[in-house]
Length: 323
Image 1 (cartoon, rainbow, N blue to C red):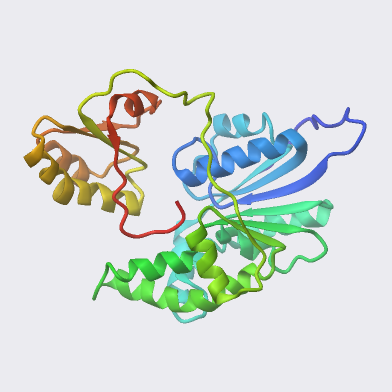
Image 2 (tube, rainbow, N blue to C red):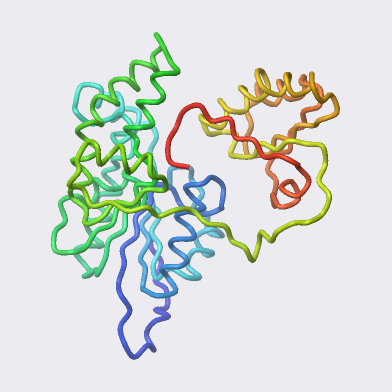
């Protein structure tokens, strides 16, 4: 729950813009692309405005230490507990409604209550929803500008995914969601003054569904102060990095180990493969240990060493959208 913080803008001669920032995962620590993007957006916005963060804490990472870190720049921080059992019930029930499973999962009554209280107690100049998973909480709010940082089109994600699955429970859920999203996604975006995407393919898919939507591209960047150009020698090695507990990353790791890297080793027997990331499943760790030349590096604190060591970064994505 929110803890009172000192308003660092109190001494300004002109009042800063007041921004309500919603996320579906607490944006710290920096593991996973969604946290990286939301964290840096929040940090930059806090330099020019007064930002109140409300975050659904899906992975229970809003520890006192992590809350303290975000409070260094956010005006107020509220972490809302996530109840997985309730989410499972909502997801199951959504199969019989027009709401896609993904959005039913994150439609937390507790989060809605906290957002409603914040909006009742304070007049905001702008509302920013990070990912469409948070859009439902403010979709009916009028009179305040709203930006949806959608990042990708979930419709495009599911349309691509069902090409790679067949006759499995996941295939049918994704197929049902794809059908729902053709209406649900553009309808939700109509409630916002602007919707941003990270890639043109996603923007194009949504505009094909509704050309009247107000959209923009908000690309990713690189922190060039932290990641400087490296001119040193690289090893004869390939790098795959990512949160290894995330579904798409697990698929890529298995594809790399089972279908791609063995062919590389046939042509170049001394080429190593580094797989670096968080929370690999035991089955993945076992597969890496059984693959000659492959090495697992878990929970790496700083990836710069691996980016410099490897000659090639590989990202064998078959499904998904956005970047």
